[in-house]
Image (cartoon, rainbow, N blue to C red; front, side):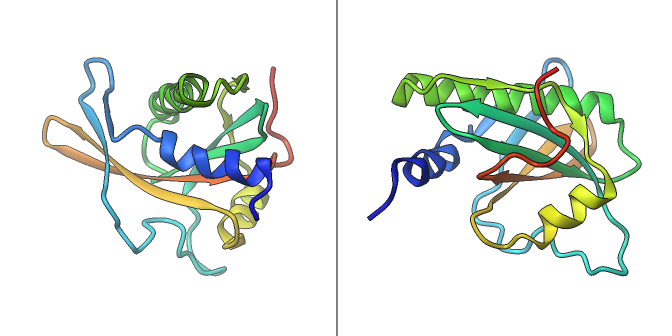
Length: 154
């Protein structure tokens, strides 16, 4: 039998939007069932991606992590992560009346990235594609059912 915390965590996956507009910067779409992680299959000797974390707290505690290529503008993708985290928490309020807040975006350290990428259990992994003009950016999103060290409300 699932605990209320586990049930609420499973609801995070269902609250992920299938798509949303990213201001004038194009559209962001959830990719159906891409089985291979874009960035989550690193090996210890490999190059780590950039990671941005958002702590979700309140009626449930989780961390949303956005993984992206190092050469991308972190401020732009921090804002995209803000939108995504807001959409998730708003949907959980509408569907389940969960009271949640999100932290400001926090760049993840190498230590945090390695820990999150090694964690195979209880992590919801999804891939979004951001399309803008002739560019496509893959964003791997991870929902981890706990708070990552160093992520919190400002």
